[in-house]
Length: 115
Image (cartoon, rainbow, N blue to C red; front, side, top):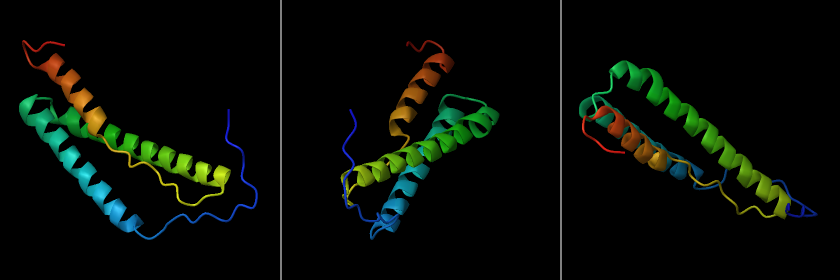
């Protein structure tokens, strides 16, 4: 069941005050997580660097772009449907996927590790 479309909608701005600070905070968080992924994969799990830099990190980059774009689209859609302009997109990060990826990769790579 969809939400009713608000009548008398005003134009929703794409950016507002505080967006730059939010961008840099999310950028720093995701960069730190990518550095952790790289270090754990290469030095702890001994995943070949070709796989890390050729598959894992590009995949993380694509997932971040798609996830952030999808959440931004959902927020704008909610603004349009309700006529309110105080919705925001949930910051999409890689922490949950990072933990699952390291667990599964570690279980497959480290001898004696259990699922």
